[in-house]
Length: 291
Image (cartoon, rainbow, N blue to C red; front, side, top):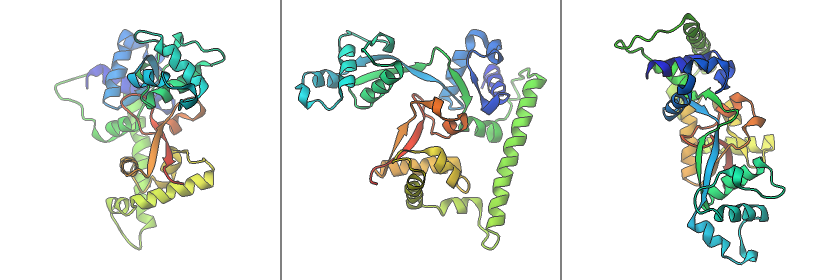
């Protein structure tokens, strides 16, 4: 990690919820480099940022669908109009060029995501150009808290303000971590187990039952946001343990993990509870394959 990347992370530690706008004054010192730094740290999964569909292009499956009888099409009328607009372009087309009467931009973006997931178009995802935000991920928090070691051969000049951000971050996160372990020990004083033993005692089947129960109790209609499950199971589970369990349940076709489209209706903490992806929106909703 180079000096500018480290400074970028330490800057985020001084922001509310470790999140800020890419155009905010706090990042002015990085000038034209900030987008590249942001993307590089995103590749390491230490930060994530607002993304958008930059261009789309119709695929052979989409072309074939347009040749079907209109009564047999597996898409609705608005999706069909958008697909037809894309098909008229010889190459890639920006979403802003897709004009359909009565269709709002956010509705268009949802349709583009749906068409892409169905393999009818290919979508190029890039950093959002307007009102983009960047935030520290759970992986970034773990790295700064548990793994980061300054390189002896590299002596970055860190201001006292940035050092103060890091000290406050450590105090907050190490205190929370300590409280979780203390709670586990006190709650299991009659039957002492190690932290890893407690984690391993929660089976995938029990996690699946918890998902079903939460969906019923919260009335999320088989679209349970992951942050509800984290609140229920972390602790005793660690974040990565739960993520891996969800991946296993998805692999065995017991659940589907769905991406987040409208992040603005959730708090930053709730959004950060999703499973970040190298490209596209985080996996945010849990859908049972069988109710």
